[in-house]
Length: 149
Image (tube, rainbow, N blue to C red):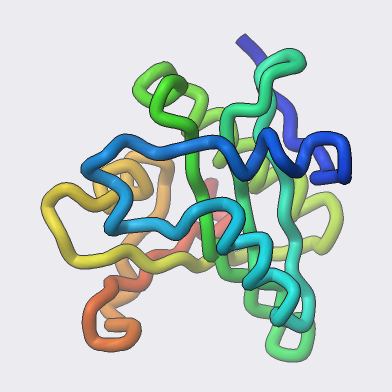
């Protein structure tokens, strides 16, 4: 089933805020409402809702730092009812394509909490690799090089 990344508008904002991760994931990611509020304080946020047909199933927030040309995936979430169905990998692949097309970027960075139940395995399975850098002393930085994939 194909997915799409769509702009968050007044019409779909509430539905995006109602999406929830699985209970064991709540300590790894803020709610979409918090993430959208945080985006207001970023210099250049890029965010989208993840849809399957007409159903919102997730949220993506990227910090676009055009001065350093660094793109960081700050939030990636799929609703608990849509996890483990391949939608996450499809959304990451589509994200790469859209960022490449819109900005011509090469590398996409993210970081994950050091925890067995964290999303590190998911990101590695999507093509991210560890950079060897610790972020805030508790997260591992990962990078996806768009030219090598």
